[in-house]
Structure formats: C-alpha cells, structure tokens
Length: 214
Image 1 (tube, rainbow, N blue to C red):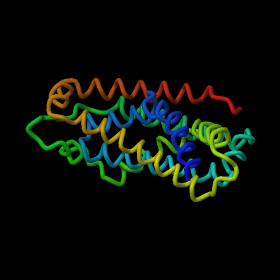
Image 2 (spheres, rainbow, N blue to C red):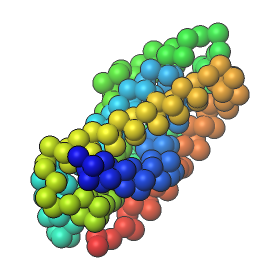
Image 3 (cartoon, helix red, strand yellow):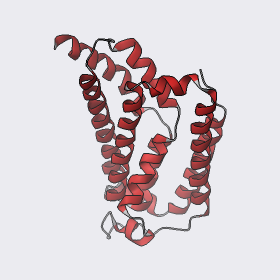
Image 4 (cartoon, rainbow, N blue to C red):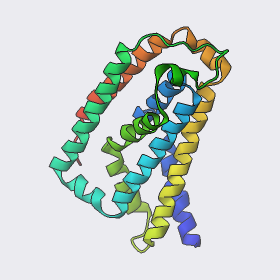
C-alpha cells in the first residue's frame, strides 16, 4: 500500500501542472461560466472529468499505445478535435450579446440561451475527448511512474483521483467566475467575451492541427 501511495503522489505531482495549464478545457469552462452561468459551467466541468477517465481507461487497457503508434488513428482523433474546436470558435464569433444581469440567478444565462445540462456536459466531454494530447500524456506518465505490476483496479483508482481533482479545479473556476462581481464586470462585455473565446478556440484548433504523432 505504501508503494501505491508513492505512485499516486508522483502522478499527482506531475498532473497538478497539467490541471492548471491553459488550454481548451479551461477556455471552455471560463466561457460557460461567463456566458451561461454557474450550473452549466459546473456540469461542463464534470464532462471534462468524465472524459479524463475515458482517456485513462483506454490507456490502461493498452489502446493508448495502439493509437500512439498508428498515424492513421492519431490523425482521425486529431482532425476530429480540430474540427470541433473550430466549430465552437465560429459559433462563439457569431453569438450575440448575452444578458448577464447580476440581479438574475447565475444559471439564468443558460435558460436564456437555451443550453441544456446534457449539452453542457457534452461540451466538456467532447472538448477533452477529442484532444489526442492526453493519449501521450497518460501513456508517458503511467509507463514511467506506475509499475507494470500495479493491479489494474489500483490504476483505475489513480485515474479516479486525478479526474476528481480535475473536476474540483474546474468547479472552483466556475464558482469564481460566476460570483456577482465577476458577472457584473464581464456583463458589459459579454459579446466581446464570445468573440475573444471564439478566437481562442480557433487558434487552439489550428495549433492542434500542427501536432504530430510521436
């Protein structure tokens, strides 16, 4: 058990840097928080965390190694991710002004924009699942930090802890970005937030398009 705790601590030390690094996940949660409200942002955070378990699962089962060694499979995942990010970016650029009155409840933005919680979850899941970079990230850290003799259930336990921490981080971001002061500050520039996030998503998509396997 002591060896497993050391493995988990080592994984979390590395993963903590990945959690806070800017990327499509953070951009998605911030946009959801500012333009749709607290509840959709939190649900999106759970979508991202669930997607992380998806990556961890196929990595543990060995599919991550197959994808990392197959140019065709890697490119399929990559271009799906590129298309998704650019699609979200274009939708953001074309979005209109959002009412973010601080007198309204935090979730009112979602109601006015008509975004269901299922869609909120799907946005988070897709943003993370269609990114091929976690394939190499989890494959590399699990192969270097986790012993080959560690039971599969323990490895899944590591993944669950990582996913929980990721969800907690993005829920924290959601709560902070949906405080009355933050909503008041951003309410006046909601359309520009949409445009800025649209540019960010498109740039992330273009950056992903330059990624190479290996």
